[in-house]
Image 1 (tube, one colour):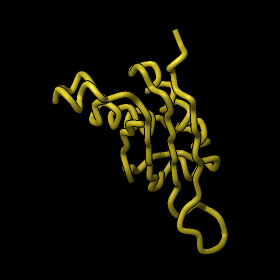
Image 2 (image 1 turned 90 degrees about the vertical axis):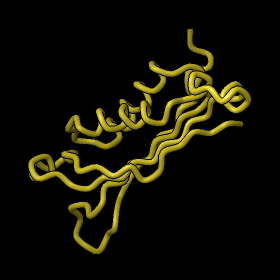
Image 3 (image 1 turned 180 degrees about the vertical axis):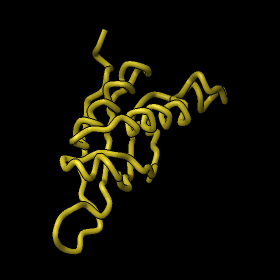
Length: 123
C-alpha cells in the first residue's frame, strides 16, 4: 500500500448554510490521503511515477475557493477532480473541518469525512 497525503491545509473560505458565513467566511482545514502505486517513483526517483503533491493541493485550493452551502459538496468535488486527473487511485479520503462553527457553545470544529474507492476500475 502506498499513501500520498496532505495534512492540515488551511483556508479562509466562504462555505455555510447561513448567509453570514458565505459573506465573512471562516477557517477551514482539509486533510486528504490517497492510495496509489508509486513503486516506479520509489525505484527510479521520477515524479511521473507518483502523484504530485502540489497538483493535489491546487485541486483542493481551487475547490475550497468555490463557495458552497455544504462542506460535503466541497469534499465530493475534490474527490471527483482528483479521480479525473490522476490514475490509478485505489482509494481517496477527504476530511474537511469548519473551525469555530456558528453553533452555541464551545466547539473547536465540526467536520465531515468522505471515503471513496477511487478509479481503479473506471475506464
